[in-house]
Image (cartoon, rainbow, N blue to C red; front, side, top):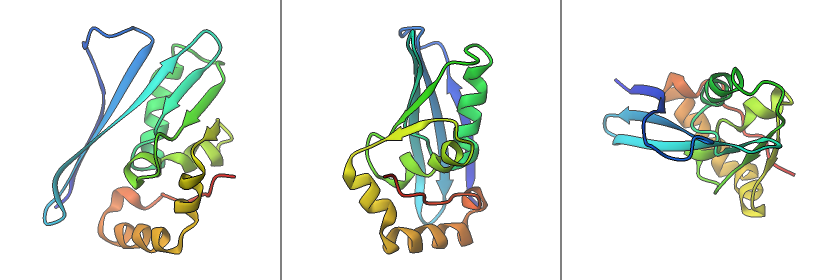
Length: 139
């Protein structure tokens, strides 16, 4: 049975403007433990979200957790790369018109690829955490 947990990493003694969120996901027979980090970096002008984790609910958790402190600041999402465990939370920001998303052109190509859609459908059938993921190609 898959296990999953999402939390904000505390007490790293880093710059207080940097907030780290970690998703741990275990899928026996698939991988022992997947650990993925995403970051929200607070600047004077905006909140920069680096990667959106595994699903829209992950992205919502991150933004909700931090926006209580910084309500009203614009949000910019940066996809560091196109791997599914860093981009499948993007749809939260698109569907809620919550942020502009920027990424390399390769990211848009991969998210538009039918192979990626098939991969997502396979995961949605196997793991409930992915039920709300939608691949929305970046333009």
